Length: 225
Image (cartoon, rainbow, N blue to C red; front, side, top):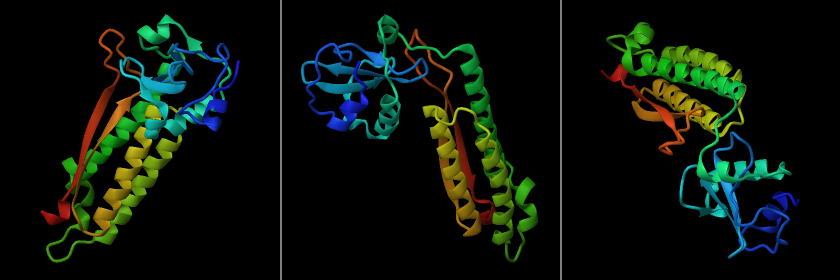
């Protein structure tokens, strides 16, 4: 059975692949935890992809944000999981993997909620010593936040499933908003942003509602009150 990395090397728009070497007109996935499924359509010899549970197929080359991850996964695959379980419902991770993913997600949500408490809900609890009537100590406050950020980043580094699509995106969002918050504190500017963290363990087969999420708003304006 030919590896799909050959498809990626040769291009995805039109490929002449002998029938029977890879699944044709059949949905397949790369693993039980892969949130995507794929199909090589014989009509135009194009590789399509879609989120499990979705009805609409999209050319894989057009899904830019997810293409590189899928390309990396596909290049390592020799076998493809096909069948009604792939086409009709969303696969669930095994119990051990689910526990690991849940633990990783818990680390991420704890950090996000702690950030919200520090920056938005109770900033005086953490930054009151840096606020004065005449001149706020932005450098001191940003240095204090940087220490907390280092602690959070160490916790993120302990995550086991770093390559999981949802976990990886959650980590990226957390790091980005921490960097933006640090700059805002240091430069004495306001910031109002929100991040949405995706639970990688939640997939509803009955309703096709794939994700359960946590949205956290970060609003820094403490020195401007």
